[in-house]
Amino acid sequence: MIRKHFAGFVASALALAVSAQAFAGTVTTDGTDIVVKTKGGLEVFTTDKQYSFKLGGRIQADFDQFDGFYTTNNDAANESYFRRAQLEFGGNYKDWRYQANVDFADKAGSNTKYDEVTITYTGFAPINIKVGRFDPDYALEKATSSKWVTTIERSSVLDLASWTTDSEEGIGIQVNGTTAGMFYGSASVQQQDPSSSATSSNGDNYLEDSDGKDVNSFFARGVFAPIVSETEVLHLGLDYATRTYGGAGVYKGKIDTRLSVRGVSENKVNSSKIVLGQSDSLGFDDDDVIGLEFAYMNGPMSVQSEYLKRSLSGTGSNADREATGYNALFAYTLTGESRIYKLDGGKFDTIKPADKAMGAWEVFYRYDNLKVEDDQNLGVAGIDESTAQVHTIGTNWYVNEAVKLSLNYLMTTSDSDTVSLQGRPADATDDDGQAVSLRAQYVF
Image (cartoon, rainbow, N blue to C red; front, side, top):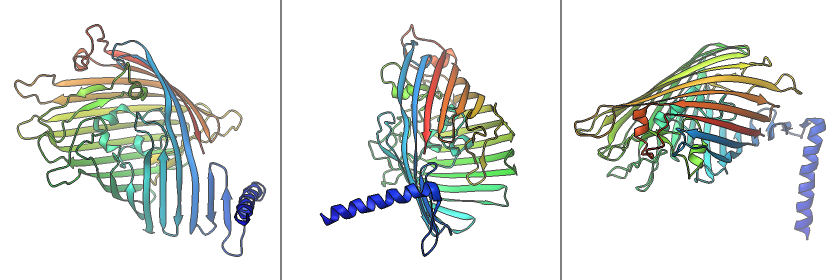
């Protein structure tokens, strides 16, 4: 009975403290002052910033309608699903930061997963050392949070080397930092952890080597931003990633893409990813990817573009494979706000509405171009080049700092040779497609 009353007292005291914060803003003690914030999640920290924790998250509910090249029979299909439902917990203990993000959304059958679990040491400022499970630091669109990326889905160009933007459940160590108010850089080594029955993110099998060693990947990213202000940004970036699979047939080199429509993966009846590079039983050994980033923002206008080139070296006598892609994005905020830019991380952030009643309205257009080329050996069936292009137009309504509503319309084109790789019925050979995507997002 005593424990029950004590628990009730503690709960009441906490509720009273949070309620009081709404009026007082700051809770003081006989030691270091404590600040409690409830705007955008729950955050508690000491005024000297030595200790803190924050509880937040995001909910993204999506709907996709797609046809043509996006479906196996070219007829219309649709899918509604939770793209993300993340709970995010982090903070610091003096020079040590921690972060744990758990995603409860059903990610194409994967169910609950850790999006990030890391410990970071900041005592060597401006250098940070991070250890744990985290996505690679590669490409501007990937560096930008899914909460604030302009389009509903990131560019399909990144699918040409999907392992550069997904840790695939492995762990690693990263060193990053900023200097001189215009430079940001990071370097990491991440160990993929597939068992003998595991698959890569595109379903292409790869195994541990004969000594039981996992696949190790190296990533490096450098950003030069000579102009960084609230209303103007000039961003230039260089990316590099490499890994070696270590044996014939370990990695078969399959390259496929959803062409920026996630519902293609969620729908199990009438949809499939588009195959730009078929699996090759002889396999590939060395895998190198380079990327270039450009972005310029001036007031409500911003443009950005990225280029990616992936080179796969065939194992033994097998031929090489090369994938190249680029995109270009133009965005304009009709209500006049500028996008927030953070040099630490080399990324764009949210748009904060100036008018709390109207919110902020943004319109945009993005073009993606993808190509995969094979150096075919004599007697090997297939084609030597596959291509795809995606046009995306859309609008974002930042209703307030927590709610964002998005509408995208996508038009896809390809060629008859690429369609022939898909194994579709003879009467389902469309080389173009359309899709409409909707998202309702709440961030706390």
